[in-house]
Length: 81
Image (cartoon, rainbow, N blue to C red; front, side):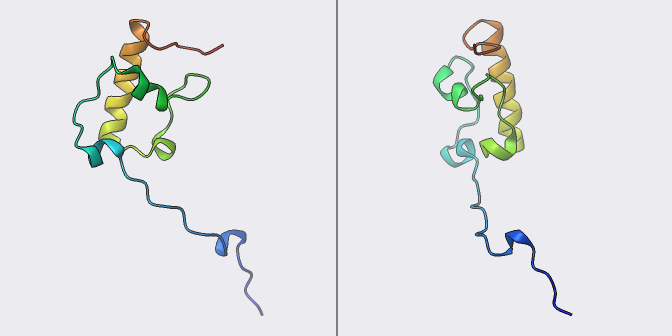
């Protein structure tokens, strides 16, 4: 019998993602840097997950805390309208 190929067998492998904070040597993420923090929020102002953002686990945790702090002092919105 012939083996069936999966649908994704011919597609290209996804590119490896590197944490942009590790590559640039950034250790602390500043909650006042709203331009950077907005890149890691969706159009509905949700925090983007690690698999989409490409951040490592350490920096994703720091990123989430920075976004939450910026929301608390009204630098970032909780919900976009």
